[in-house]
Image (cartoon, helix red, strand yellow):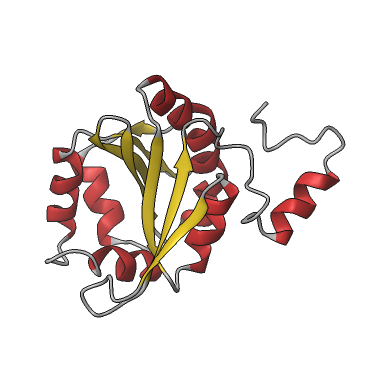
Length: 185
């Protein structure tokens, strides 16, 4: 299914059914643990983003960015346990649509923070070109450690950072005869 515009009902549906790691990560940095309030807060920031639904039309992932001040964007994504069925489409949208749109809007820096134990998110962020910038001990309301990731506007999201690209992604990229990075060229 093609991605659809961010909307309150789909945001709530994904937030209410988030993967356990996403739920722990997101609600560790909020005063509440309420899916409706999360959706309202995200929409209040006038974000650029989409809902990605699975083949059955069920909302499975939310991907977006919110401009914090000129040139600095907060990047975010969360998903349900249906993530494997929409991961490729979500990644493709991030690389081919969202990132170029953010660059046109003047992005100099995109950043996000991820719970230290959320290894699936870290792998995906590195795949998109994110680099670890900082470690934030005791960042969550329960004392959780978070990792700060950054992607700079002058660096294309499809170009992996050789210092943070994991071995699996490096080997996959090197096995491609034309060096294609998931259709980014």
